[in-house]
Image (cartoon, rainbow, N blue to C red; front, side, top):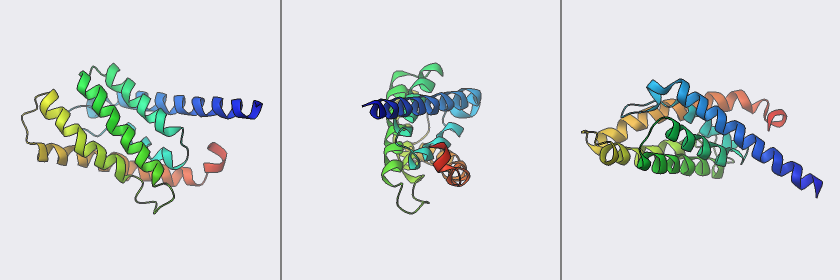
Length: 162
């Protein structure tokens, strides 16, 4: 029974640390984290479900708190956070596949969901396909490039850290 409690505490602590790092990265780089052209550097952390399932709730809570603290509107708080959750779950499900597939779920989820929030929530006067392109490019930079750099760096230490 004691081992189960230890595992649960470790899971929650790791999820909380990931959430905190996500929030800090988002708010420190706020000028790049919000808007129709955004490169949310914290989205690079969506690679972490490859290493631990604790990253899934951690990323969701981190995104949720970042959107609340960043002054986002309710649809963005809800649907932006859900996009990150979907991406994190997708990354977790692809963790044993080709390592280059892992960043795809957050890129796709955000590129498909966030443009509708920008268009109809924030009344951004740009067409949805263009917003999908701008959000998608930002996600490719964050998840595809920076996320893979993080993955390659952590791969060597995964047994020590996670």
